[in-house]
Image (cartoon, rainbow, N blue to C red; front, side, top):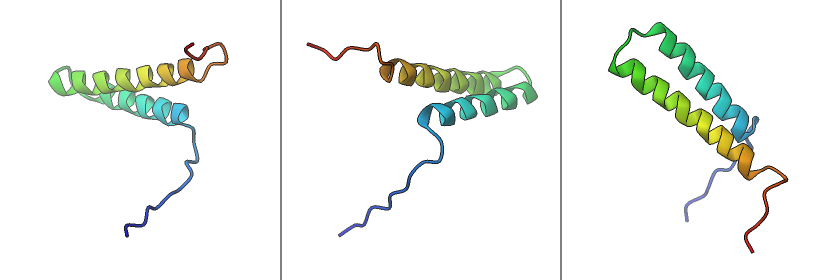
Length: 66
């Protein structure tokens, strides 16, 4: 039997995504314009979008489907 190793995250998903996006933006500033920089910026945008979706899904105004 395979034993699953579980652990609690120290930061919430939203906080981890925000930190990841920030670090990617900082990395992109150090890169020269080109395909690699564009890819890093794209990943940062995806992380920010994921954070916004998490906010939306966990908002108290969101109603369950009827």
